[in-house]
Image (cartoon, rainbow, N blue to C red):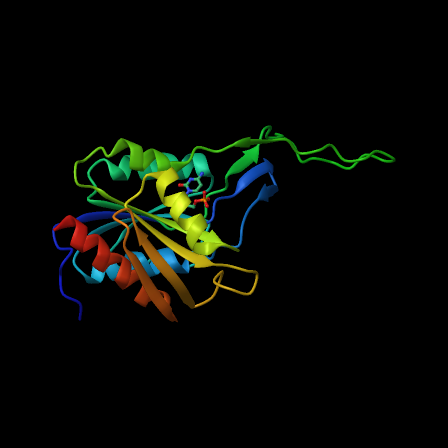
Length: 221
Ligand code: C5P
């Protein structure tokens, strides 16, 4: 059993992937399964934390001993994370949040019209929740962690993203269609705003989660 080094702490974890509706039956989504976020929630609870898990469209069973808030879109996820962050010691944004959403939501199902080309889909930006939570720091000493899935120049892009977002730690992993998403395992490097670089060898998502909590606990202490 884990040492209760997060006892008395409230941590917020986002998990899964947002869905941005086009009409009542269609959405823009992504391949996130939610497994890494759930592993973070479970391991934090095992280490004594009070956990709020904000879950976007996952098919996973509710983990025992955590408060779960289910959301659909990026806008809903933002509301839930900001509300829970108000009294949180740490916020870990493991969810895959859509950068864009359709500009228009069609109240009725979009139909194909005989002999006509489809209408293009116009997108607008979603709020960047990680950047917002990092900028707010509603509670002093809060530790904010982001995730970055990169396909190339993983470390350089990760460093740039860490700066841009303003978070304390950024977990960077290399992704491809067959890598990471839906898988039980992960391999990553955790970059710190203090310049630190913590490689996490290929292994179960729980192992990566425990490394993240080690680094968070160090910064809370
Ligand atoms: O910019 P990018 O999507 O690569 O950043 C990934 C990190 O930022 C993740 O931690 C994700 O949860 C968070 N994010 C967010 N709001 C967005 C987009 C990403 O909080 N709109």
